[in-house]
Image (cartoon, rainbow, N blue to C red; front, top):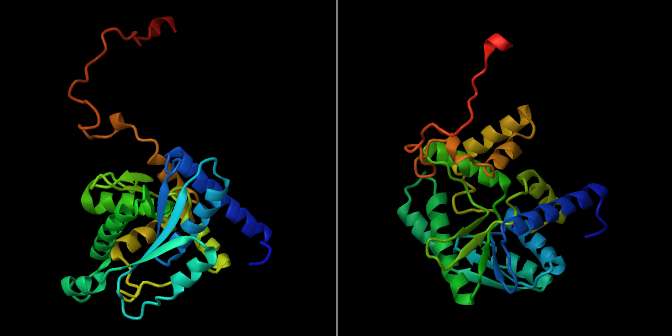
Length: 274
């Protein structure tokens, strides 16, 4: 690439700064870590790798990066694109071959969304591979908007206040997942991907089929942001400012033991003397 424009330079600095803040705030990467960056071939994971490679150069700690892509044996998948790109970067990479495409097609009826099963199969395979190569952290490209969308999806369809945490220990106890782009918004990532001209690989498993519920929530949030700019950012900040006593989860706050405090000072006001 040539010289960056002023706006491109600002965008690059903003993404790097926000990712660095997220990594520091949640202690995502530590001295000696081996970070497995999961590449799908989409804008988010390319941006993640790009930002982490910069962070690796400037961070006060030493850590290794290994890029991993999973070839799910989708018909027409361009097998040469990612290896060619990663070779130009000069970093260690692996292509994990696992035919989850056939499994998904066999188990999911025609016309139904495949995203959930596809994601579970891919996640299980990557967890196993991370263990095999001795990765201590597994980096995913989810960003702020993904996190907020997931929050509403769980609220609307599962009846739970749950999102995507920036850092998570997997159920198997052997993998720690990190999301360094947690503070970055999708609009910035799309713009960054566009000017960096990453070799995007579309998901053709389901004809680029959208997860319909997630798309509805995404559209809702985008509409809110058009009407009230900054609303998605405000919602994200609320996930970092939880007050259990103002909710209704008895596992988080002991409502049953609440009594008046006999030692509290009286708030009685003598109206006659006013």
